[in-house]
Length: 256
Ligand SMILES: NC(=O)c1ccc[n+]([C@@H]2O[C@H](COP(=O)([O-])OP(=O)(O)OC[C@H]3O[C@@H](n4cnc5c(N)ncnc54)[C@H](OP(=O)(O)O)[C@@H]3O)[C@@H](O)[C@H]2O)c1
Image (cartoon, rainbow, N blue to C red):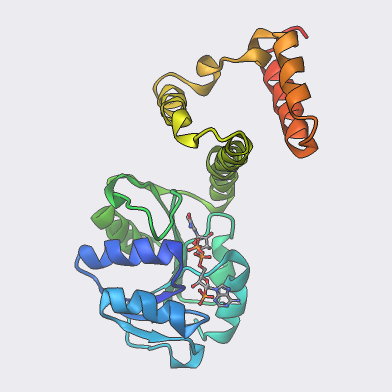
C-alpha cells in the first residue's frame, strides 16, 4: 500500500517504520518544518515536503500524525473529499474527518519517543472507520504490524486516552519530580529502578488495588508527617503528596 504521512514526530517516526518494515511504501512525509519532514523521509528513503499543496494524490492512504490541535488546520488546508484518511489521536473523534469518503482512526496505545526502541507487535492498535470496507482495510493493515488489534469507538477511545494520561503521563511526571528531588540530595535515580519495575510488574500481574502498599494505606500518621515536613520547601510536591495520600485512603477506605 502507498502511504503518505502528515506529521513527522514521535508517533510518525515509529509507525511509519513499522509499516515500511511490513512492506508498505511510505511515498511522502509532510511536516510543518522541512527539517522534521526531511529527517523522517531520509530514514524511510521517501520524499519530504512542508507545503500542504505539494502533498501527492498518488497514494492509497493518508495518515495524519500531527499534534492534536494541528489536525483541524491540516484538514482545512488539504482537500480530503476523495481520500482514504485516518488520524492517530486518542482524544479526537473520528468525525473530524467526515468530509472524506473513507475515514477513520488508527490509534496505537503506547508512549512513543523517537529515541526509544519499541516492538510494535505488542502495541495495541485501536481502529475505527466510517464504513465496513474501510474497516476491513484498516484492521488488515493493523494486523500486519501488531498482534493486538481492537475496534474501538470514538466514545471509548477518549476514555482510553484519559487512562493513558493517568497510567503513563502522570506516573512518568512523578518519576521526573522524584528524580529532581533526590538529585538535589545527590542520590542517583537508578537506585529506584528495581522498585519502579516491581511496581509495574505487580500492577500487571495482580492488580493495582491489591498491589498498593505504603504509609497512606497503612495510615502511618507519623511517617506521613515526616514526609510532609521534608516537603515544606517544595509546596508543589507537598500538595501532590497530600492529595494522593488522601486519595489512597479514601479509595481503600482506611481510617485516618
Ligand atoms: N507520542 C505518543 O506517545 C502518541 C501515542 C499515541 C498517539 N499519538 C498521537 O499522534 C499524534 C502526533 O503526536 P506526536 O507525539 O508524534 O507529536 P510530536 O512528536 O510533537 O510531533 C508533532 C508533529 O506535528 C507537527 N505539527 C505541530 N504543529 C503543527 C501545525 N500547527 N501544523 C502542522 N504540523 C504541525 C510537527 O511538525 P514540526 O516538527 O515540523 O514542527 C510534528 O511533525 C497526536 O495526534 C497524538 O495524540 C501520540
